[in-house]
Length: 132
Image (cartoon, rainbow, N blue to C red; front, side):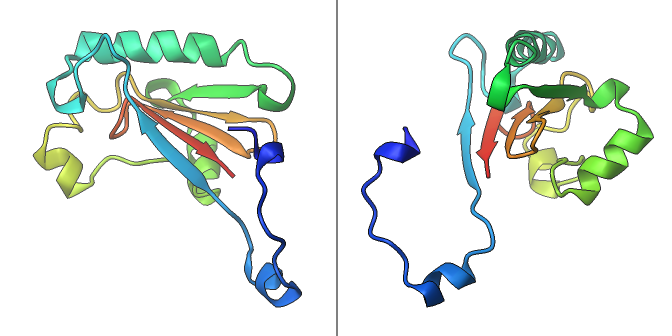
């Protein structure tokens, strides 16, 4: 998964001018835990603790900050919403399958300092990893 090893033909100038940004998202779940509709509040909190602990050790290009939804300041919340990074409660499909239970416990978002790498914890999947 090293982008430097990709052998892609170059874009024409016209094609390149149409690309404003690229976002790659992948959803993952931890093997030791049930999927979102079946996870308990305690298990969701364990997932958040494990993953946020790992993310806090990232340095260099990946170094950044973790925000727990439960303790996030209104200023941080507004900024992350304005940046189009923060997921929110209220999606009717997530609600219908029980993924909004115990909101906002056990949920959060990490981004690196450049805001080009994000990890959502316990939104739909246990991990949503986003690279921009």
